[in-house]
Amino acid sequence: MNAKSLISITDFTKEEYLKIMHLAEDFEANPNQKLLQGKVIATLFFEPSTRTRLSFETAINRLGGKIIGFSDSSSSSVSKGETLHDTIKMVSNYADMIIMRHPMEGSARYASEVSSVPVINAGDGSNQHPSQTLLDMYSIIKTQGSLDNINLFLVGDLKYGRTVHSLLMAMLQFENPIFNFIAPPELALPNEYKIHLTSKGIRYFEHAEFTDIINAADIIYMTRVQKERFIDPVEYEKVKNVYILRNEMLKDTKENMRILHPLPRINEIHTDVDSNPKAYYFTQAKNGVFTRMAIIAHLLNLK
Amino acid sequence: MEKHLQVSAIKDGTVIDHIPTKALFKVIKILKLEECIQMVTFGNNLDSKAMGTKAIIKIANRFFADEEVNKIALVAPNAKLNTIRDYEVIEKRVVDTPKEIIGIVSCFNPVCITNAEKITTRFEVISNKPIAMKCFYCEKITNENEMLFY
Image 1 (cartoon, chains in turn blue, cyan):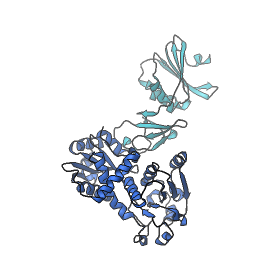
Image 2 (cartoon, chains in turn cyan, green):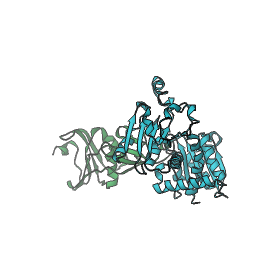
Image 3 (cartoon, rainbow over the protein chains, first blue to last red):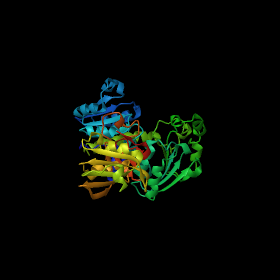
């Protein structure tokens, strides 16, 4: 189909990333712009995701659009056995844009082929969640003033964490990134990414310990170490408390360093960090609304 | 000369030689030779200087376009094709791994949408030897030992 969709972070060029950043800044300054007046946006959540859905729906409301859709597949015709193909075909007749989350990987790419209107992937299994990456980038540019020359520390589940992989791929578009990976061996970054970094001549360092090496960071990107990723529960018990960020660890970090987390957090950031000005994760979530307004406006050529 | 004795010669058609013995029936499947109404003869576990043992297929009165035959590169990357006219080899070809594989292999990822709905699979070949292919939909990489043919 011809409509421009956002399925993977690599669907956008560097110029588009920067345009989204500028639009997000504009929407943050003027959050109520009725660009979607008279338009209907479908939010199809085949699996529940309250945080992402509310963020998108807030973005649509702020833009003055109307919302149709469902928040889990039991309240849709999927429960009657309708295929994704038919659901998307039908909804693209009703709405001007489809925002979807689906448990099957590749579902959003397939939907974009079937749909006559733009599709935004709000998560397809463990594959892609590009609006999260764009809001991460917006949080970085807002706090660091640039996406170039960023020393990024990625911590936790680097093996399965889709937000980590997407952020890494997006940051490669910018000048001189440095990556530091902190993860247990069971959850280390997959080799394919390391090979990719090496082939591009990008500097990266791997650490199994979470120590004062973080003092060099511009951004610490924390992720959850998920119990279900471990085959052996004993292995999980061994590492679950190794990657906890505590306030005392931040005392010698850069003044301008900020801590990001895609949320929800379990225990990997101690609550004593929350009051530290370097804790940015809740503002990061707020940035998500402006970033999603920017994505919608860009894909529908409203800005 | 011994090859003529092992699998009888054809007057016109195509001989596919140097197929790994384990790949013979996959090649037959990929080229849809079970549907072919022409004479198809094949031999397996034949002696080969280069491979130890090999398989060979002879298809009478069938000629293949490159893009058709390149699909077998997934399982027989060193296969050689001889085009036969009046018992003479008039052309020799090797197979090239295509850049894109459409509709031959299933995605190994059980939660890929292509395994849930009726979708023709599409892969980008990211490595030739050994073969590795990236699914256009779920973006996961299927390796040579994980390939499942339709």
